[in-house]
Length: 381
Image 1 (cartoon, helix red, strand yellow):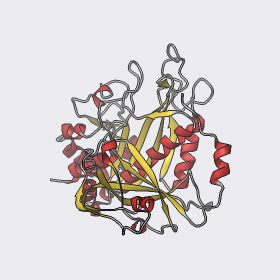
Image 2 (cartoon, rainbow, N blue to C red):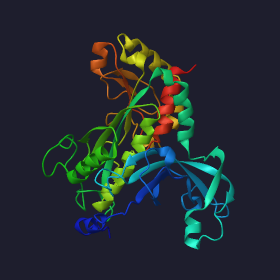
Image 3 (cartoon, rainbow, N blue to C red):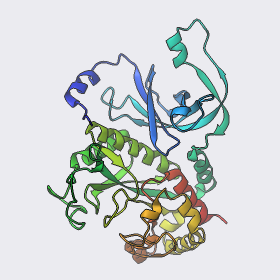
Image 4 (cartoon, rainbow, N blue to C red):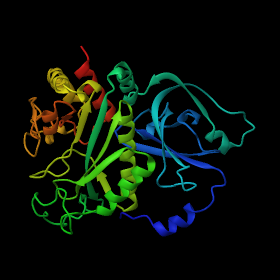
């Protein structure tokens, strides 16, 4: 049985003085494209991510290592204020996004340290190679290569709230279905919106954390929602989207509700869920930039199936040519066309500059893989 957090009781303890200590939640992506986290106590508030130490975890429990050699290294790469623990009223406690690396030689602190402290302070050195599930590492190389183009991204993350007890969308009847699609998109009122408290809490928590969340809305299916992150430059896009996902999972956990980012959570005449990816370079944003947008789209069209390969699992269930999608087997683009692979917004066509929207990515993408291939295929040879 799903149990919601007891907010008033928890607040009693979160209000206690931390006596100068700081809680840092180390977050990483596991072997199943899902998020994991654990907490480390720090002696002071870190001023930058470089002040955070490496850590490690049991990769055999996350699909990232075998039991006989299970250590995987965590390397902090980005830091955000923790909206769940607060801390000092200004976000002293931190959410720490980490990359995963393969370990090298292992050493430990002197034997005089008590056993519990020995475990906490174990030093695992990296052999310098990123773990196979670390797609941020390769993305950074691409972003560094094309940094002069000043690439901006904005990702529209669609998701559905689920009832853990029924394994059906939150608010749906236990037997049967709600009314057909039509009244839910940007809807207002009971019977149209299920779970507004959750999406509002997520929005405010993202703002507190420092996420560049630019908006939210209810989506076409009942109990389906979307939030938009961006514009973010380069690598920052993937970092912020992963943390926004983490915050949503934690908020929904408090309400005893689950979140799914499967691209087709409910079969039938219901919209799937995507991660529409908006992209532009400095050249595209300047006068006459439409020509650069069309040139980039032409180059991307030649690598359609390479894109599809990293645009999310089970995306074939969503990209059917119906429910506001293009077909997975064909590439297309057009102005204001939501049934195309790539849409050029009408305002961009009118002004002759701006950005493109790649509508192919599924809701369960790794944003590092998507932003990297968009940039590389549109600007590369």
